[in-house]
Length: 422
Image 1 (spheres, rainbow, N blue to C red):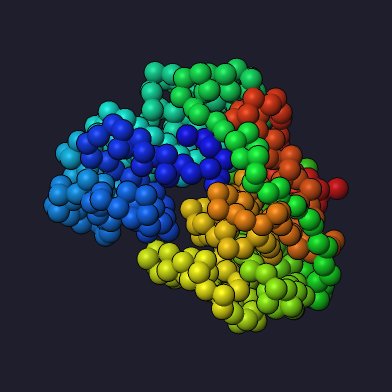
Image 2 (cartoon, rainbow, N blue to C red; image 1 turned 135 degrees about the vertical axis):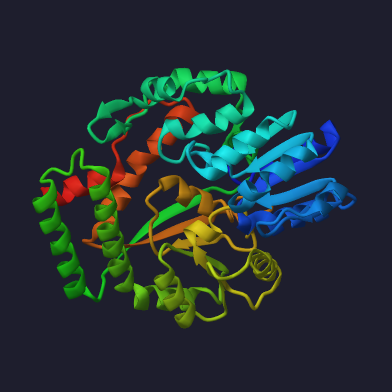
């Protein structure tokens, strides 16, 4: 179910479980376990459910109609879960199993053999490259795309290099979309079914940073690194890419540090008049903003899943809670925060679809405002401008395979390295 974020995938899944009968296993990110509890209690209160935790399987799960478990621990539970023979298996945010070699993907594939019905949920089943959907497809029907390499060559333009397979463009996207929509994917976009849902108004707000000296030194370090390692930024080996990623992340962090005063002032001025969802990328920025912003609920990595859901409910129901502060990674999926119509991005993610997921926390069923806003504070003259310019190009890869639009893309990291090498 590749329905856009906010179109009720969890409610539809519960209806499917009811229709098929029998017991069900729901696998989701740890942050969403208690969101599923909330959905069951609201839409199917008579169903019995159990939330799994820890690495030691619990024999009590046999007593419950619905079992909820997070991706991080299914490897430890897979033998117990497979013996339960669930009628229906639901993978929420199924892009979590996009890497075929990860332990969670292997466990998900293993469990798929023991359930008759498999439902995968994701508004963004492809975040960066078409190859990401292969491991999701094989959970549903391993016969449609039986060979990973053939898929990579045909639909992701895979080329063998000295460092492994390079896949930097979407190919034959129209054919891939046709196969997906005919055999295994239901794709629905908001504008097709929710004519009454308010439009998203996106705006970029350029800001000046106040730590130019620190930023210029870090930027100079990256430019020198590129000259010493690869003057063009093309086809750099994997270990160098990791090093480049670290350096660019540091540059992103420094740029964000230089915006703290302006952003916190803007939030404190506007939050008394409207509730705001505030997204960061780095934990350091999250921590700093939590000290500066008034009437703020801060959902950081250290906040456990159950408490996160309580914060969501407080934000939804309390007029005193004015700002919901979190990271794109933690708060960008699963939560319903329709008491606000304003999302604000302090930093950008490397994956453009993550921004759309985060915007969908407010742009979903239940939103009453006439329009919703997504405001991006971008530090002028910094790496943020380069990222902002390129994430839209990167997003085309998702559209080409999922929505049938032909497009090509280059790796975002390499694109930015090329910009700095000019």
